[in-house]
Length: 192
Image 1: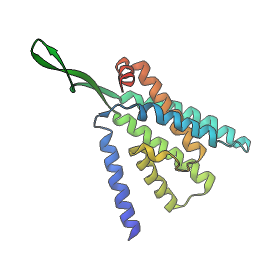
Image 2: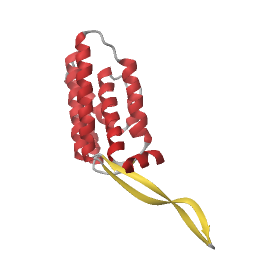
Image 3: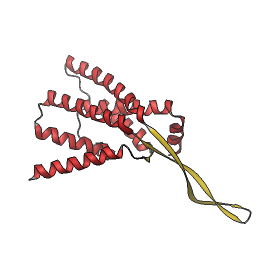
Image 4: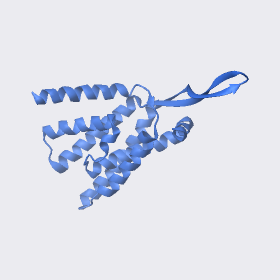
């Protein structure tokens, strides 16, 4: 029974995550800036090179992450809206609200494809290095969906170094490409 419930929860969260990639969410420094830097620190802290195979894995995953991070930016969209703040200025005898630009972004289909490819590569590496079973695969998938939806869950989740490497490198490339490609995104990051 618990397996069926777990499957339904995983399916529901996955469907929710997929639909969120096509909706606009507020641009925050935490999502685009703080978490990728934190993940990079976790990668540096947790990486352990024990054999030559680890070096090949490290370099291969770095190249994969760079390509995926760039690919994910190709469907990125940014929207800005003007909102009234709680502040007012007096113009004559009239109170005029102070307006503020709010930025919203969405990842789109290519972000979703990149996320799925990242998950598959993480899963393949985990299976080959830790000989994971079906239960662990479902657990890994659920945790990946949860950490994608709620980024703060990545803190202290005990992920292996290759998981941190893929997340950190692809996220940092995503961020830096967006900064270069979308000047408005730079403005949004300065403002938030």
